[in-house]
Length: 398
Image (cartoon, rainbow, N blue to C red; front, top):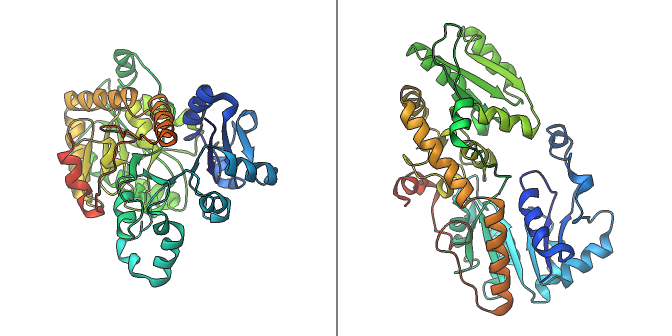
């Protein structure tokens, strides 16, 4: 079987899965990158591994060869590319295509009423309802969006991103999370990591720090990242006299962010509904953090079972968020329980090895005409979860 993935560019969230597929398929696997990576992502360390990847093909350097590979492969996974011209010849030829997509209507499903937008969705998606075209849903709300335009009926599957999953001796990992303040008292270590953008609500973390200080909690908040809100956040920390409680570290390479996670008790994931997936959730759960996450984030309903392996608050409900953070700060047993279960979720199911095995079996099934979806997790049938239902879904998940 010859399998090819086509995406705008490869990054450290995609490389582990691609490595596993390369181990299975060897020269029969390729990843085609269609665009040069943006400068800001390169500065964040996302492009450092690219030059040494044996299966990576650059469309903008080998256009004819890559176009032929897209057409001739047995299965092509296509996603993250706005320009449909890359995949249209294969679609017209009636060959197997697996689309991998985040949401169509991230800003609101009301946008589906646009006649021009519906025409575009028909051309790209709906007209292939009966063709051998399938959808991998990069987020819990993707299936609902595509259902609105009647695309891929009974052909939508749970998927996401699969960053590297590390294995730990949990007792040793939890020992690394033990911190003492300047008085020798146990201190809860809290982490926020990402770009300081409005959609990611980094101010939630700083406002929660103010609240925890008022509640006389011994804690320290690490803020990793940068962006347009950075100076405003630093001014708030100074205004509220939190300099001893909050530290800003700027952008850090991926391996350093993982180290912060490994040494943190609690991870705060505060993005709103504009966060299509959010791979930091995978990474923080793998690091056995007790996560507090917003229900609007694409990855949350797929990965978190509220009260079992993390805590979920209603999208953009700050007061509910801060109460959950306070609850975790006061309950060491709960922190450890959630962190342990989060870690098990990653090592047992949501990891590159499992995803590669399942995708390989799925593709073989497509070629044999005998697709067998998984019962749960990656490549199980995607549930139709409307954005307003995500909060309830995490509480009812098995």
